[in-house]
Length: 163
Image (cartoon, one colour):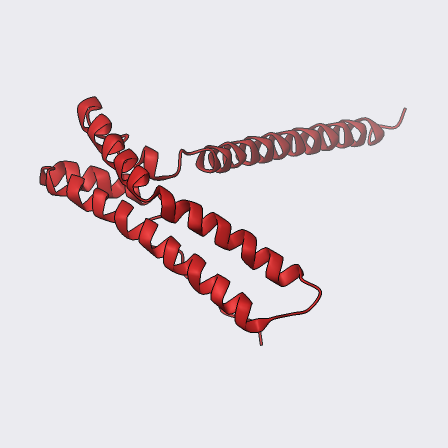
């Protein structure tokens, strides 16, 4: 056997083994990175959202008080909630009607909007009343909880529109 053929075989075998190891490490790293990222995205997606979870960082007694206040506010505006739901149905009915009546649609939208505003104003007032009774640290905790709520202003930056 040729003297040069032996080292060349070992060199090719070593190169193949090293290539296999590099690819295995890269693939394992990519798999770890993608599953970690997917887990973080899933955790963020399943984070409790909504007003009922806004006081989760507060004490149990404060949470009960907060939820009771919101519940009372919702009971007080139940007719407005029903009016808003009926208004949305009317809007859909007007849009699907065989003849388009712009004035009727505008009136249904205005009625729905005013009912929604009344509901939101009363529920926001109950949150303000509750926040007034909290210490500064607890208000900060409530504010963090409200950032997950539909009442919180959006912190996302708007994407520029394509021309």
